[in-house]
Amino acid sequence: MRSVSVIGVGETRMGRFPDRSLRDLILEGGDKAIRDAGIGKKEIQALFMSNYNAQFFCGQGHVAPLACEVLGLGNIPALRVEGACASGGLAFRQAWIAVASGLYDVVLVGGVEKMTHQSTETVTEGLAGASDVELEAGLGATFPSLFAMIANRYFHEYGNVRDEMALCAVQNHENALLNPDAQLQKRITVEQVKQGFPVADPLTVFDCSLISDGSAFVVLAATEVAQAISGRRLVEVIGSGHAGDTLTLASKRSLTTFDATVHAAGQAYAMARLKPADIDFAEVHDCFTITQIINIEDLGFFAKGKGGLGVSQGRTAAKGSMPINLSGGLKAKGHPIGATGLSQIHEVVTQLRGEAGDRQTGNADIGLTHNIGGTAATCVVNIFRGR
Image (cartoon, rainbow, N blue to C red; front, side):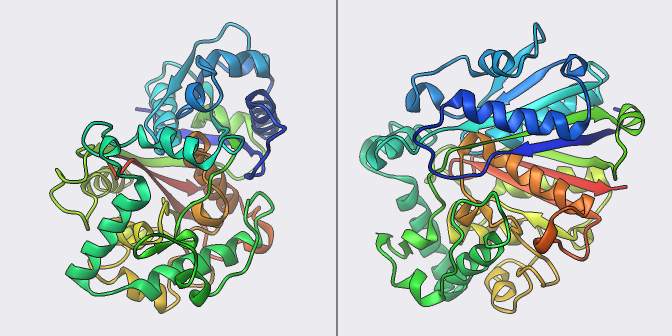
């Protein structure tokens, strides 16, 4: 397989946009990425489009041809990719494989979701389809309740990390203050998180990721093509992994280790010929605060049961030894499901180019993105290197 690099990124601001349509969001994010790549639309040979549930939320299916039409891409092949909250990471991986295999030289990969015009009850129903509808959602389980079970099991196995969970939210909100695309630019405290409106014990509203609208796009090219096109620092995809696990929570081997993450990360590290200590910073899937702690352990940044200690010691903060979610993460930047995995990549590429402004990390050569779907039934891990 040949080397592949990112040559363009673009995204909308994440937020609540009741007056904006899917078309509006696609057009803004897609045009930004194409302009950032410095290419003409005729150079794009295929589109891989991530979307979780526009048919339910907006009544719109067949999203990939819609994006092609909106962006004026003509008669190129267009494919929608769906993997719940991991849809963006999956779409990116499929696009990467298509270029790495030599099938295409330049492709566009994008993601979009629009949910905030619907009621909380309707959004909850739409999201429940990413769990087992018969054995979980049909019996009243929601994702907050499922991840609350995970948190309580983690407390039982490794000790109570309630304060450390809250600190994850605090740190991500601090990072979001410096991200102009973030939905929630608001400083919070550990006590505010713990005393927030209860959702599912021990989770409060401040432990949960946001309901968001938004889009994010990435242009990929074979590295030899990218070198001829791009005048800025190239960002090469050096590792990628994709793994799965049971859909139902009850069937998992462990509630406190996400096996899909462990296996996907192992694939990505092996391909990149790196180990966790070689990663300079990461964007991880913090759908709930307990998830961030488990993720940074499963990715190998901290020993099992020690992720909370890493957070409390400041090692995951913006100026720490392993900065996590410099964008603000799903918790504060926002979580427009189909766009989330690609927005993570947008942040990593921006950091590796040295273009992140006030939130720029000082050690940005190798970055990692981690994207999960459902209760970690799907996971995609990608590793990038600036060169």
